[in-house]
Amino acid sequence: MSFRFCLTRSRPQISEPHLDPDATVNAATKEQICDSIIMSVQFDVLYNEDALDMDTIYDELASQVEDDKKDFPTSGIVEQVLRDYDEAGKFTFRTRLTLFSTALGDREEYAFACASKNPSREGRINIYFVSDAYNITIASDVPTDAHIQARFVCLVVVSRCHLVALAERSALAFPSSNPSRLYALQNIYRRVRHRYDIG
Image (cartoon, rainbow, N blue to C red; front, side, top):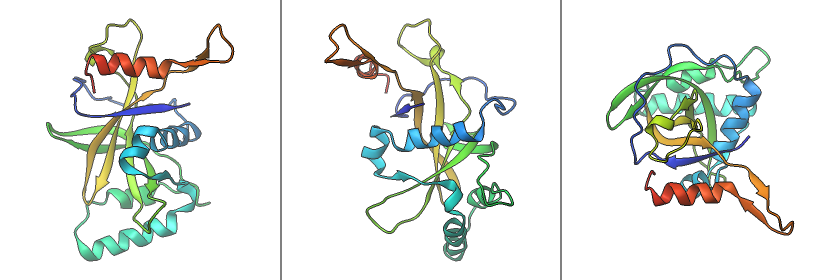
């Protein structure tokens, strides 16, 4: 499973938030979604961060939370992430209502946490929340009968979770009639989306 993401320059109009969390996506799939978004080329270019194994960062994250409390008031967002570990120390990828902050105002979304860190320097663990999937076909300017599934991604900064991206499932590559070449649907899709200046 692979996702690409785009900056949220355009403002897709999703009229109603989900009323209930999506219970069909298990923890292993959520972990794959996190890895795919954080390791995407676009995300790497902008943030230069590596996805972290949530099961191995509890102590470091708890220490970071304590250090942050000394410097500024926090909202408890990251503390809630610490409560998502089970007795065995495994991260559960629990979906919770999370307040996403945007230029248009705040909005509650069902979302699960992911973590990343810049590998080239000693740095903070960054916590992202990834929303349940939406069908954004209506908000798209590209005429299509297909359902475009996307997830909103926000970054926790101090006490707020700021919307930073819209992640869509990547198109799959397929072989051409010439076996020595592969054509990536993702590149074709990007060119079409760029031509229509969707974001």
